[in-house]
Length: 286
View 1: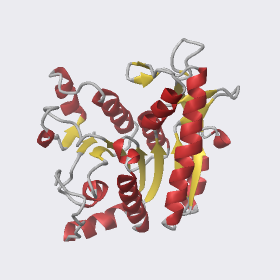
View 2: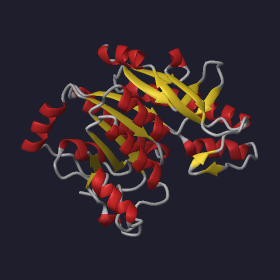
View 3: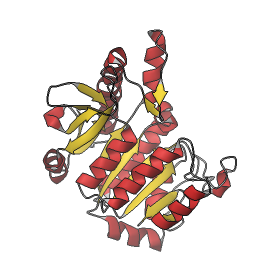
């Protein structure tokens, strides 16, 4: 399944029907970003798959990043992107660009695309109705990377209970109105934990957690906390996969039953991961 081409179709099976019955009425939090966001045809595929899942009665909250476009606009301003421990170093100028790109451009573009698919959606950032309250992540007055303190779950539940699809940009605020850049994986995990979601799904640029980074066929499909500890001790989890796995662990430890890491570039990867037992990505359970 991991080598599905974009020309293939998703086929229903008896398993699919039973899984539809199982997940109808469930709540999923999906983080969307990376290459699947850059390419317009891949973006359309993701939107169609999310639209289909919602038509099955699954409640979905979408959290998005957009680092590639932030970097693009920073380069136009001759600003070199900087990172610390895998997280963007966000000075005041960079924070302005982050908010402009995430809350202004990407968020509203996604809402428009979902609306064209007859999905009643609303675009939000963490600043709307104090959806995401944050404090500084680092002891640096000129680094506006944020740590999540609180999620306004009442606001999200209002949307979900009225069949409104929340699309959330990973920007937050504090009590003084200062704006913070939040890692989108972290925000998705925190929201999943807060709303007691049934699944956290991270759409990435890799097939999942790999035994061998140079061999995409070595995806580890089934994970639990004990196996994660073993893989960590062997140095299998490394580089950009570390924060993603940590976000999944946080969700599992906060009673989210399952967290998935899948390749958003593969056609129907979201449907195959959720609606078949021959999943394409990595799934972590307790």
